[in-house]
Amino acid sequence: MKLEGRVALVTGASQGIGHACALHLARNGASVAVAARNQPNLQQLVAQITGQGGKAVAFPLDVAEEEQVKSAIKSVLAHFGKIDILVNNAGITRDQLVMRMKRADWDAVLNTNLTSAFLCIQQVIPSMLKQRWGRIINITSVFGQMGQAGQANYAASKAGLIGLTMAIAREVASRNITSNAIAPGFIETSMTAALSEEFKQNAVKQIPLGRVGTPDDVANAVVFLAAEESSYITGHVLNVNGGMLMG
Image 1 (cartoon, rainbow, N blue to C red):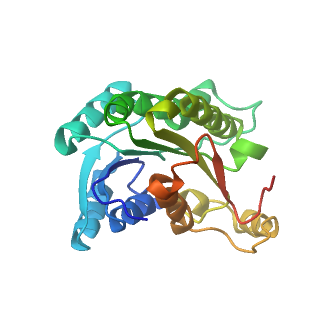
Image 2: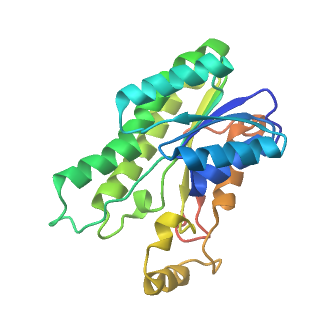
């Protein structure tokens, strides 16, 4: 999957899936704009990519803040001249049973996981329309497809991301821009590391392949959807879940 000459923007790139996506995109030739709140982690990522011969620049960004989204993407466009590939990966959890969930926790998750994707897409679309080429890749979740007790806010945000993906796909397909989502299952990241060992063991029992996934598993799918080889795929949700959910 050759991505030479392409510019990718990855949100939530300071750790986990976003970190892996940035590395894999760079290894396949893309110049990568990495964005997140954690600047020390981003600088380490940039050093890792450039140390391997790739191109990367860090941009501070809290995706929950609309003005920061506009400013960061304006800076990326000023630096690279375009954005070919957008990976909306930034996400948070604020888990609680719905009867106890605070409105602030609902709003925080919806703003970070869903509204931010809308804002980022809105800002990069003009560049993609102008060049008549683009790849929008939204990182959703298996729980946006099947639900999860204690995660009404998270599941709703990820389900909304799937609807957003399909709506955008229909809007921009005529300009050779694709919009797809990737739905990871249980992936070993810092977010899942906080879960109890009992929960993890029970989760593995639900996975036919018998193991949790890695950020690299998701990143490989991102590279595929970013490449020319996937040009006839749009409005699709690619499951990367080890068989946890089928159909």
